[in-house]
Length: 550
Image 1 (cartoon, rainbow, N blue to C red):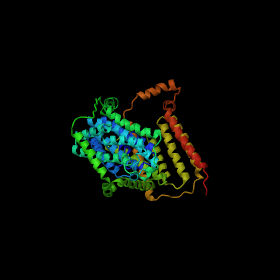
Image 2 (cartoon, rainbow, N blue to C red; image 1 turned 90 degrees about the horizontal axis):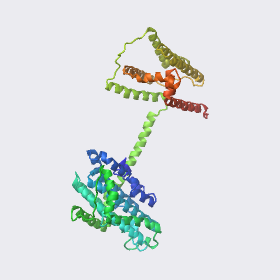
Image 3 (tube, rainbow, N blue to C red; image 1 turned 120 degrees about the vertical axis):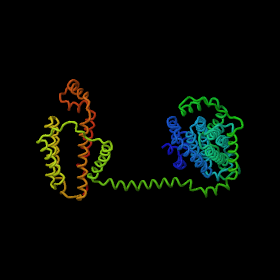
Image 4 (cartoon, helix red, strand yellow; image 1 turned 30 degrees about the vertical axis):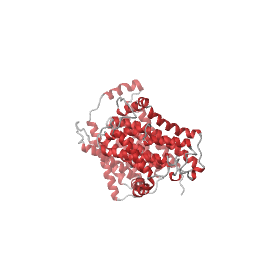
């Protein structure tokens, strides 16, 4: 879920595809908010799950792959918003990678880069929107020389691009050096992660040039003839964000104490002191930063000769995940249709069979695995008339299943129900027996009333289905009998019995303990059952009133 939300490979393709939104919305979504929700979730879970092999392996592998893939695909695009969208994918992969590494330096780098990306990406998206508004185009191959007509927008874009490229004294330089430090001192895969970070940042330098240099400098294009600077507020947004990226790099002490330190402490699960600095001397991180900018400048200079063959050789990387996703959706649709046809047959008999089979497999399997069987710890005291009554009920139940007369079936059902009522009388539950008598009487009357509305009796199932239904029904009955016998053998607490007996009259003014339990002590349960019955009755009434066209 977190990988999908934050566009990690192979779910990254949705983010560039969401570029239909207006540019201010894209700036809001891609800078620091919606797409980082998955990263935020991973960060909050890191204190509990961080350090485990599965957590570290998944986050590092998916994060590094997304980081490199997003940056690589970004510089091959022509649309300004798609370029920035793929660079956002790369940034999200970087954050996931840093959380996966999990060291103090990596967590510090994650927080710093989170702020860095929020500032420069929001500014660059607004710059792209201003260019689109002024020229009607976002194609970088058609845009150049806009700086004369849009000087303030060009300046804001240049500041944001310098932070994205990681040049001092911008905050992006601090973030890039921390990323290199995190990979160089990672617990594992040092060389692979460092190379991946360098490759991704090299392409980010190229992207910064494509977005902030290519449209504004060089020979004016045809679009530059009618381009114009936007209004004050259109310029204010990107200029403000880009300037913050510069000021944050110059004011590292307050930024560390007010923002980075508390955030890193939350990620690490303990109080952590953070100190940021622009200059640490000549070290491996600085050398990698210089190498990154140099390689990025070279690729940007010769991009026209490199882009076409690279796109031809690796174009499938961009489209394959989305096509696989569509194939998976189509397969899910076909499978769902087939499964629905198989399960939703429209026959109540099949639905009941599936429910009973599921209960038999799950509950019966649990009884077999747990070797839970009735112990018969109490002696059986069965009398002749009880056996005779049970036999009569069994014969009546058999007649219900075998008869071809609805009247005989209804009568046999009544025999089963009234036999159960007699059992309640024999076992000393007259109130329950009276309730059962009333229910059975009403049930038989209802069946008789609807008999004349039913179509002629017809055999709709074959002998094989009847045998299967009979086996499932008998097995279900045996399972329920086993559950009852097992429940009888379990120890029963006497405190509840005493409580209900002592408080039925005192609290509920009732002498019938069973009725008091149903109406007072468990009134919400009873209310729920009444609501269910009322809904069912309403549905039946609506069906009876429905006038179907013949």
